Amino acid sequence: MSMKRISFSPGKLFEVPAGDDDHAFGLMLEKSPYWAFYNRQANFDEAGRPTDDPMFIVAVAKSAYSSGKWGEPIRQLPNQALPPIPRFFRQDPISGNCDIFDPSGGSDEGTSATPEDCIGLERYAVWSAEHVVSRIADTYAGRPNSFAESMRVKF
Image (cartoon, rainbow, N blue to C red; front, side, top):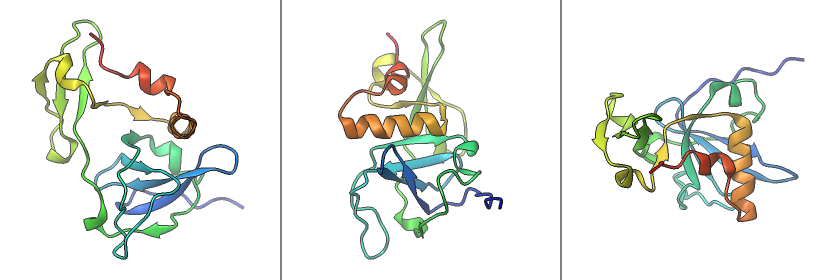
C-alpha cells in the first residue's frame, strides 16, 4: 500500500515525530517552503491560532514531508492563524558579506547587512527532515544543535 503524497498547503498542521515517543507540531506557513515548529505542549486557541511562539521557523525540503514520513495533517489552521515568516540572512562564505531578506516580501533581493545585523536571525537554508528532527530533539534535551550552530553568522 503506497502512502498518499503530501503537497504544500498553508495552514496544514502536522505532528512531527521527534525521537522515542516524542513529537513537535509542524505548521506550513503562507509560502513554500517555510514551516514553523512548535513545542509538543503548544496550545491553540478556539480559532486555531497557536498561543505560543514557535521554537523555530525554517525552510523545509519537500522530501521531508511529501512522502508522508511526517504523516497526514492533523488539522487545517486558518490563514489568519499563521505566524509571519521572519527575515533570514545569507552570508558569502569567502568575503563574509551578509544580506538580510524577507521571504514574505516576494523578492529574493536582500539588503546589505553587517554580520552583527544578522545575530539572532536564521541563516537561509533548506532543512532536511533529519536536521529538523535532530533540532527538535536537541531543543527538548536542552542542548545546542550542531547543524543550527554551524549555520550561525560568521565573524
